[in-house]
Image (tube, rainbow over all chains, first blue to last red; front, side, top):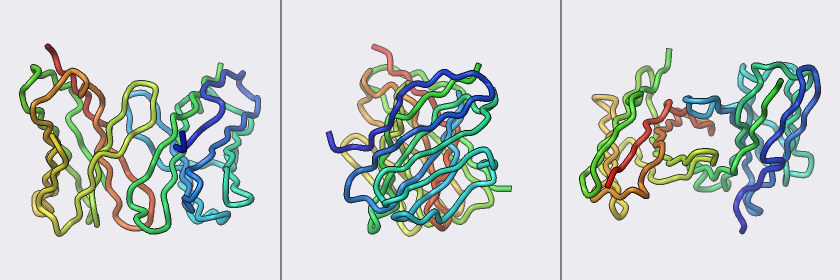
Length: 114
Length: 111
C-alpha cells in the first residue's frame, strides 16, 4: 500500500504529558498537511509543508504544538503539555507539487487526553 | 466571516434513489470546490473537484454542480447503494493550499 500512513492510530495520554505523531506521505508528494478533526466537525487545517519548509500555520496551532519535516519526507506533530481539549483525530494529508488541489489523507491518529 | 454550510441533519434515502447533498458558502471566492467521502474512524477520501469556471462534473454515479452566483454546490449520487452510506464533506480552497471543510452530511442508504 503506497498511501499516506500515520502512527500511532490511537493514543491515550494523561493531561500534561507530551505526545508525538508521525506521518509518512505518498513518496513522490512534496506537500504535507496536518488537520485536526473533532466529533461532528469537518477537518480543520493546522499547518502545511512544502518539502522541508513549513509555509503556513493556523492560528489554531498554539505554541504547545510543533510540527517538523526535517528531510522533506516524513513529518512529526508534537503536542506538549496536553490538555483535554486536544482530544481529537489528527489527520495528515499529502499532495504533489502539480495537481496540488487534491489532497490524499491518511487514516488519522485518534488522541484521547484523560 | 467565511462560512461553509452543509445539511447538518443526516440524510436517509432508499436504495436506488438519487441522493442530493448541498454545500453553501459565504464570503469565499473559491477557485475550486471538492467533495470528499469519510467513513467512521477513517480519513477523508477525494471524490470530485470542480473549478469555478465549470458548471457540472460527473464521475460514474456521481455528479457535482457549482453555482458561483448562488455560492452553492450540489452533490448527487444516482442509483444509491448501501455502500454509499458515509459522511460527505465539501471543501473549498480560496487561495493557497489549505482546504477548508464543511461539517459534512451523513448519508444513510437503506435497503
